[in-house]
Length: 408
Ligand code: NAD
Image (cartoon, rainbow, N blue to C red):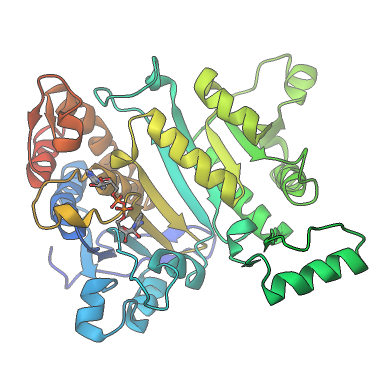
């Protein structure tokens, strides 16, 4: 890739990204098996772009340091330059990072999300023919989960049982607010705001509209947690009103549209979290985009990934306003580091999401089409090969090469 004509991705004054033909895209190699899967992934993404646009477009990859490699070179696991570059260049692909033990960090990933305000964790879940799945009809699953990333019980506000803080808080709750909390309780706080809930739901609804998806479902536990999860549900309906006629509450399909939703509109549903866990097993075809608070989102993302064959192939992204990091959803699997062995599927599919984020859907499509062809040819890395009868086990890099060979 000639870097002399590489340009920055910028924001469109009218909204959305302005993507040049040779955008600078950052990458973080990652720790453990990160470099293995990155080496397999980059050629796949470059080949997809090259074939889709006949050389008219290309990705100008630029490395930024994070994790162990950054620590070795700079003495910091997350150098300031990396954060500055992520802010400036806006789009990055990231391998898994090993959580440093005792480094004063809760997690590098959590820090990245907080510092860059990447408030939506987006996880598309779809089935690829050939992947072993525990479901009878896994092909009915085609959903995208938007999980709120900054609030809820994950805000990290909690105190150990019998600690001074817990004791003081319990005394306040019992004395001032008429509660009867056990003196020996551990205490966690669940903050949820209108601003953060609405921006997440707005992003999910916009995605559903832009991608012609049939519905958006608000997943919540508002029957029990009325002022947090219940408010999330109400704020969701308020966001829908902002978008006017394009969003149709499920309850109005019968009364206003005689049971038939007109094309181009998105149906707004809401489901209690426990019910939605049943629904994704029993009637998955009725759900397309899901917007949900942090904890629910954590659970349902992994449950859905398992239903279509596990985390090994699950892509993901953490996205804010004008900044997005696409990443493998699994960890750094350090015991296989440097062996060119693990499955690069998660990072490759995260790369395909990145291409879609740039609006380069044709290139992403080439990857989505090639993957089932490769699996149908019985080519797989060890993790899938051991579940596929008669499969040929290939290395991480060979799996990437095979994808390139099977692109249209
Ligand atoms: P892990 O995901 O690294 O490994 C769990 C299991 O899945 C292991 O058996 C591993 O061999 C297997 N596995 C993982 N990726 C695979 C792949 N691409 N192909 C085939 N098999 C694969 O989880 P862990 O062992 O709990 O965590 C290791 C490190 O990664 C920890 O430091 C953890 O904090 C970190 N981590 C990082 C991220 C991230 O960067 N997003 C996510 C999870 C864990």
